[in-house]
Length: 375
Image (cartoon, rainbow, N blue to C red; front, side, top):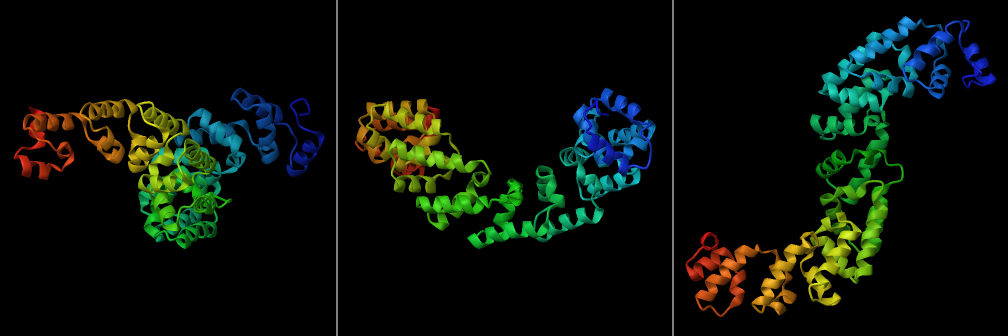
């Protein structure tokens, strides 16, 4: 035992906890080693369940076969044993009852395998604990599908303290989120229920101190709840700081983000490349910032597409209008060109008719824009 890595203290404790000689030690070690269990894992297994030394190799093999018959492959089976050695002490009936309980609640076979692989302790919990967790979420208006999705993403929630879950839900309610909104957000990011650092308050306070008002912060979180992920605070801060660095004022940033919160999902490189990409088309940094502030969706447009549109508008002397109303960059270029050719042939002098609605265009010229494109 000393050669494998057990300490003398380990050996004394194992002998004290087990009422037998260590006659089975060598056979057990050889069997588990051949199955891929290294010395450190073997030591942990024996220290956790020393009675395994009095269990026949045949019984241990049968237990592993039982686990594999549930759908786990050989690697997963031994990973479960390494992570939760107590599984070797569970009887077949107890394991089957747990699996049946999960199926009763609607978990598919693959769901159950994933749940137990990521959290093997689920095999030892009481069936009523599973019921309590499931019923708790049902009372909060989560659908069966949403509950299963939550437990699949965060299996530990099945055995988590329900009071803590209630506490985190109340934090959302205090900030003004409805129950329906809470269900939607937490179904997408169930790890929020495990948050010990109160990231919701941290993100909320950061945006509030930046200058966003409460109503806008709630609106942003509703649209892109992903910013509540644990590793997203630094990313959020980096993006807002990058916009400041590029020359946007705090007021600009707040207006832009309120208009299009998805900007917070773009990388800092994307934000930088888009600003300098538009600037490189012949605009000052001030004009570029004004264009994006007027039409924040430009951050999501391909710079090559923007360049083609700007070149066309410049070719028909609408340079200044781009600066006044950058929203015209939203229009499909083929759509605008077809209208331009029609207006030019009609000797129309008002170029801004390019941008009137289809209804008004038809009313004024008795022709549909779609028909112009087909021509």
